[in-house]
Image 1 (cartoon, protein in one colour):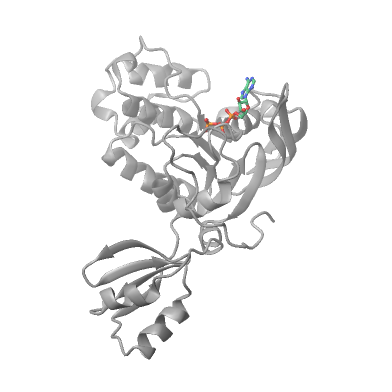
Image 2: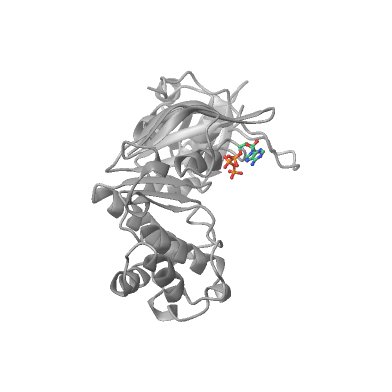
Length: 319
Ligand SMILES: Nc1ncnc2c1ncn2[C@@H]1O[C@H](COP(=O)(O)OP(=O)(O)OP(=O)(O)O)[C@@H](O)[C@H]1O
């Protein structure tokens, strides 16, 4: 378990982490989300004792990580996949690290197989692709069979097979009773992997809530209509504030008009409906709605972050 108590970090004028009160619990994968510069890496560095909090504290399994008598069994982390001795083979890299903490060859070989590097165990880690380096980083994090696993962007550079592996592997680690904290900018993967979310923006805690609660709190007013009279319905529903975001033969997605009004309109005009479905937002839509005010670094394409509609009132996302 990771417990943050009023955890804060200031770099000069920048309050990178502002009074986080968060507990990352065992048994589930917790996703750590936030725009660039939100404070995720700073938080993870403080968890590991690599950065000292300006104020507040963070405990790993009940004590500061620096005070742990057997740190490698407390927490395994992947922060920078390429921080390894590139001259060594993958196996020798793990053996060298393992030797400092009493982990032997059989566990190293088991881990290499587990992360899919068994066939290249004797290749130089310096020749590894980004994705292979990520796999080796995950193996390194797991060397000490740690109770807490913390991975920063582990999916970065992985091929589809590797992405699928992370998607099943991390929930399996959590199901064993471990605490798993995962940061990623890949929303679709996060939605499939994490059961709980901690969302930060500009150093502030924006949400600490279950995945289901997060998505349920962000309603969209998009409705999918399937009807042989789709063209006529479109004419009748058109008006100020109403947009049609997708249209194929016999199907419309309309935004800006309540679902009940659409049904009434169809009934009044004796139009046949095959389906009238309020659309559930994706994690990406829910995330953008919550963080659109917290994005500091916008691209220069004229594209606006956010889903184009005002964020609806949402239930509290921080306990
Ligand atoms: N060593 C440092 N010195 C000064 N400022 C720093 C330092 N580390 C981070 N910052 C600042 O703290 C803020 C939070 O940075 P951090 O790297 O924690 O964000 P992040 O959420 O991990 O971003 P990203 O998603 O881009 O990795 C940023 O404004 C960053 O510029």
